Length: 102
Image (tube, rainbow, N blue to C red; front, side, top):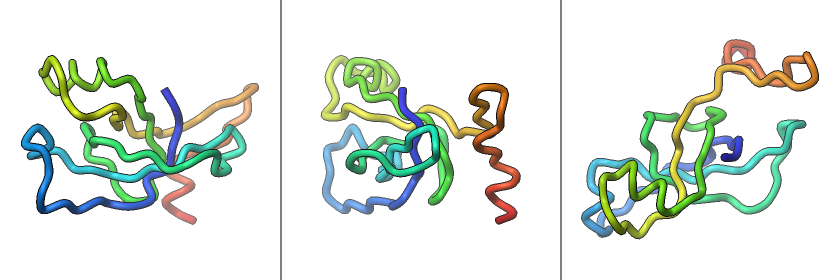
């Protein structure tokens, strides 16, 4: 799993039928200083995340297939949770309630 920030919504009028009903979002992986690391990742959204939210993603194709109830799906990453807080070494490095107020 990785911690990421939702940065873009992807709209596709033509796509594989298995994606019908699932939003597609681009997320930016973050390090524990809440700074960008690496390239953006296209994810299927299973939890109803919004732009700028901090989320947990899974980058395991077989697990995404399981979540979709399929043996094979053309997907390898999914948003599986929305982060409320992150604690590191007994210090809060992210708090959703403070992030929304800023």
